[in-house]
Amino acid sequence: MRVTVWVRPNARNEKVEKVSDGEYRVWVKAPAREGKANQALIEVLADYFDRPRQAIILYKGASSRKKFVEIL
Image (cartoon, rainbow, N blue to C red; front, side):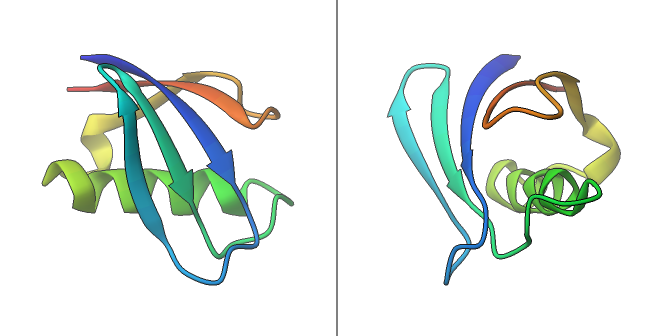
């Protein structure tokens, strides 16, 4: 399943909000530096979808707030 994710780094809490079918907003505590927000995004999505971290693949948008993720 491929989804579009809008990431908000430096948040107070980590949460996932479904915007529409295939679109999510994710808040992560990690800063948007050195890939820390991307790693936090993968962990939060893995918990949300109850999948292992290896099943979450960031295939586009590594340096953008809008990311495209594949969930295996």
